[in-house]
Amino acid sequence: MFRAQLLLEEQRRLFDVWAHAAAGAEMPSRESFQPRAFGPLLPFISLIETRHAEAPRVRVAGSALRDVFGDDPRTCLIQSDLPGSGETILRVARDRKPSCGVAPAESGLPGQAVRFWLRLPLGCAHEVEAVIGLDIALSGARAPNWALQRMMTA
Image (cartoon, rainbow, N blue to C red; front, side, top):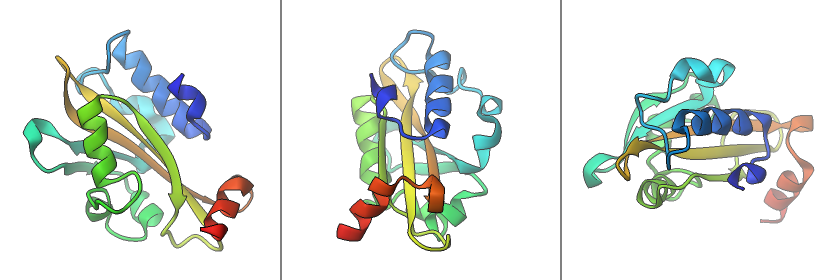
């Protein structure tokens, strides 16, 4: 049911890899989730550790994320006021459920740009150890018109 909320093929691909790694469990463990399965998505992937009620720590930030966020992704991903970041990551870890959304992109892309994000929990024994993330900024023909319209009226 969650997969139906995903708007981009890239989001569906990562979700399918995550669901396959879970093999029917609530979520996959970090060990069962292999980065090589991401293929061309790797530059847009992040891994944020959430263990033991510590503040989230960015362990992996793909090479394209600086362009997506327009700043250091390690800082952006833990901001509480940025959609899909800090508070969302803590909620995904607490609830052990995936989350996705869309927000204005802060990237250097020309014109209006939209950032699509996806957060997926990783862990075992009902404890989330990390959250895997996907952030992609799109503009122009690939960005859905409804998302651009929503940003212009906000």
